[in-house]
Structures are given as structure tokens and as C-alpha cells.
Image 1: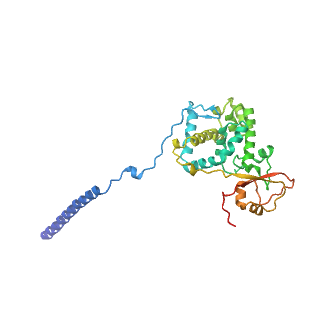
Image 2: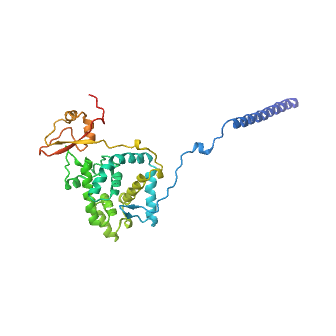
Image 3: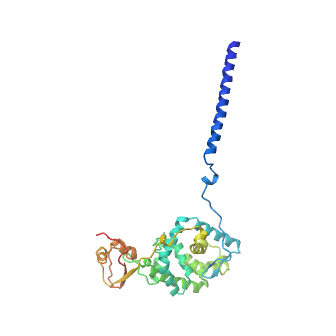
Length: 316
């Protein structure tokens, strides 16, 4: 029995010694490998960083200063700068689309005496697309049916001029000028574009204040002007907010010429072929034409935009 214990003890000692020698050799191999391969740093695995943003010392909308000395106003502005800066894909699209559509919007605002800052209102309303809201607003300026008709737009299943950028911009200008006259400031006029003149006027009276920044408002209207100013700041300082692109990355406006139509058009596919384009291209430049034909029972004069030759390749 004693002999058996001695044999087992010897075997155990041999195993322990073997494991020790293996561990030492493995450590040497590990050390050697470590010296021949580059060391990984934490930054190699975490090379995307999110930074806090510094809110500019002064910001304004349409020349009306934002009271950033108020901590509530500062925090709300900070939120919109962060949200819109770090929504990078959307931000790049705004730069691209602004390059295409601002040159159309700006002269109409100027002609109507509306501050140029209102072009950023169109950005937050629709992302400069012909959007459709759950409430029924349409187009770049998100005009409701009643507002459009009150301001002379034709709106029906055949033609919807809310999708006509130039005409819709004119309507937006008229609405904003009336709001400014009624409410007293361009900032309140901007808020009224979202909440309505009556709604903003009522809240000013109920709360006994006279400007937007002193109003307690619902979530959407409460963020509205801050979102406009955030987009204005970012679109005017792309490098500051980390957006990198060249002019060739931006979208451009395709020049067109006008064709006057004062009769019905039974087939816009055939109509488009006469000008060397197809129906899809005709619709891209005339989204206000809602059906593949034009009724025009009243013999109204419509202006249809046709892209100049050479900008599209159309296969027969």
C-alpha cells in the first residue's frame, strides 16, 4: 500500500513539473509574439467620437436676437444643434438640396420683403421635398388645402399648385407677412406658420407675454424656431459642424423653359415625347400635375416647365 502511494506521488510530481515547464514556455512565446506584433490601443477599437457642441454666443432669426443668456433658451438651442449635427445623413441631404432649391426660393422672399432666413423654415417643414403630412399639408412649404385655396392656388385631383415651388413660395410669403403684421415680429410669424395666427395670439394673451421665447408652448411649436435657427447655423458653417463635401457633391437646378398650355391635354406621355423627354421627367419638373392628363375645362393658361436639351438621356 505504501509502495502504491509513493508511485502515485511521483506521478503527481511529474505532472506538476510538466505543467510548470509548459506555462513558462507559453509565457515566453506570448512575450515574443507581443514584441513582434503591433500593440492594439483602445482608440483602434473606438475611433468614432461624439463631442459636445459650443452654442454660439449670439444667434438670431430674421435679425431678431435669441436671448441665449436665459438658461432655458440656451439648453433648447443646444438640443437642436446636437440633434441636427449628429443626424449626419439628413444633414448632408439638406446641404445638397439647399444648393438646388434655395436659388429659386431666395429671390421670391426678397421680392416680397420677407427675410431670407425663412428659407430655413422650408427646410424644417419638408426637408425641401414635396412631402405630405398626416394633417394633409402638401409640398415644400407644407400648405394646407384651405390656406392654398384662400391664396389663389388651384387644388383638386387633376392639378395641385401646392406642389408648384414658385407659386407655393408666394403663398408662404403672403401668410408670413400677414402674421408679422398681426403678431408684431418675424419670430412670432414663424411660430404662427406652425401653430396658426389665432393659436399664437391666444397663447400670448393667456400668458401675458409678448414674444416667442417667453411663451410656454407644446412640443412641436416650442421647438420650431430653435430648429430653424439650428439649420441656419449648420448650413452656414458646414466645416464647424463636421460636414465635408465639395461643390460637385451638391445637387444643381436643371434649367428649363416654359411651354404655355390653354387647352386640355389628353395624354401627357405623348405630350412629353414632343419635347424629347418622357412622362417621368415631365412630372419631376411639374409635380403639380397630379394626373396623366389635364382637364382644363375653363381653358386656363398653364405654364409647363420643360428641361433644356442635354440634361437627360431618354431612350426611345
